[in-house]
Image 1: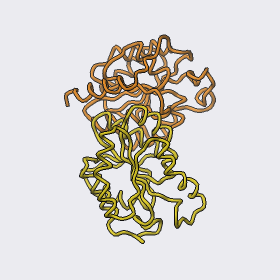
Image 2 (image 1 turned 90 degrees about the vertical axis):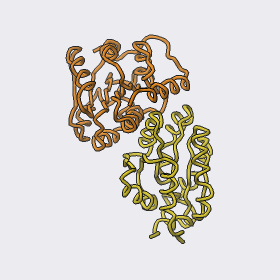
Image 3 (image 1 turned 180 degrees about the horizontal axis):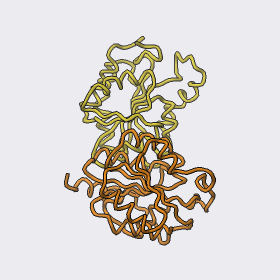
Image 4 (image 1 turned 90 degrees about the horizontal axis):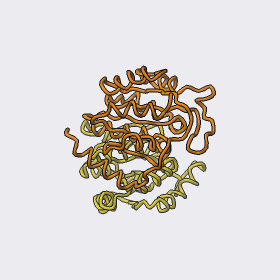
Length: 172
Length: 188
């Protein structure tokens, strides 16, 4: 079941934490967040060819004084691992990742399941602090604090978005 | 061309530009030829050198950014050329030292020594200004263009294989903080 307004809550949390620069490889779920950012003339959204490329680009922007967020599916997290470790963790470059979690409860596509099950262990292995908000209320309670931690600790953080927050692949 | 000589030709022209260098040879060569606060050296994340340069260029449109990439590395991230073409940052240039080998790992051949052309791929990606200087005189003219005209530019420089001389500085955090402070202090 979809939690109404979850996508606007995420877009607003990013913007009120001074994040206006975004990279994405979109999926159906994350596009509902992107819709708010695409409409906002104050935001710049770059569609990358691959998530790792977006991560490199946002890391460059951080070095130049600009916060950034990477919006993607958890399959894209797999495409990011080397840069996440050898750039963001090794050089302490913070980034906010917003990740739609495919391949968990309710999944219909078998190809999504192994990466979906690996997602949390990948984040843990790369020293990424993450939360899995199941409702808008849970998201609101954790959002500002997690983003603040990214820039205090100078390491990436992630919002891993479960189906019961987003409604999954077929949400409206 | 010789990469050390080519790096010197660029280094002599630099003023307030950011230079992002690719792990291995480009980083070591730039450290040796002209270490400077506005150099950002990479030591890992193979393939992402010019992605980092794109992010810096978009965050600071008032500053020119030159990426010194390598053929082996850029071949890992060819999709980036389409992103650069479509974002079209006027202050970004990608220079590829194309020695047709994976130099740092022992000189194994890359695709650019066979049938593949990075300059042609860049054009196909939609980058209009692709330069292919054939000698040091043309290289000097190409650098004058990328440091004075609106980009984005892609510059393919065929260089001889061979390792850069000298000892690599590896204090990653020190280089990062020095770079961030220098760029933040650069007048907008």
